[in-house]
Amino acid sequence: MNQERLNEVFGILFFAAATLLFLSLTSFSPSDLPLYTSAPHETPHNWVGKVGAVVGGALFFLFGTSSFLIPVVLLIWGFLKFFGHDQKILSIRLWAGLVFWLATSSLLSLFFS
Image 1 (cartoon, rainbow, N blue to C red):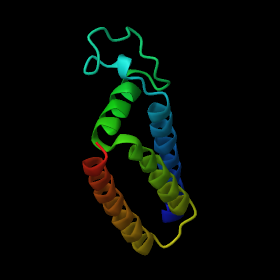
Image 2: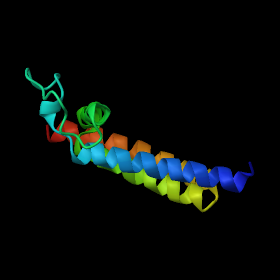
Image 3: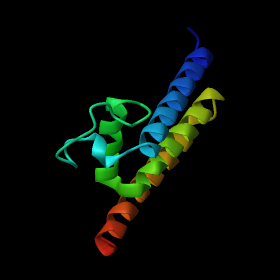
Image 4: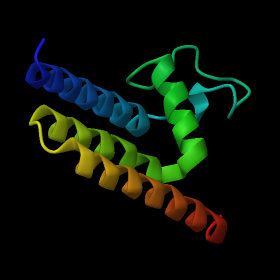
């Protein structure tokens, strides 16, 4: 398989992961997980299912509402990978942006908790 086709496959996978993450974050309900309630729902109300409820809960626990930026970063990576842009420079910038986002998220949670 040539590199162009491989980039398209990875771009589609990043797009699918971004979509699933966004759906699991959007439809997250704390009552789906036994960590947040003593009587969780038998069938989760999350659109992605039990896995989506766990992933959404973990992301909200770790990053709060700034976890909605993770699907955006994955979407940008998928778009750039699909169209074969210069990955080295753009991936360094996206990783630096991700580190900046994590630091900002942590700092804001300290001030506004």
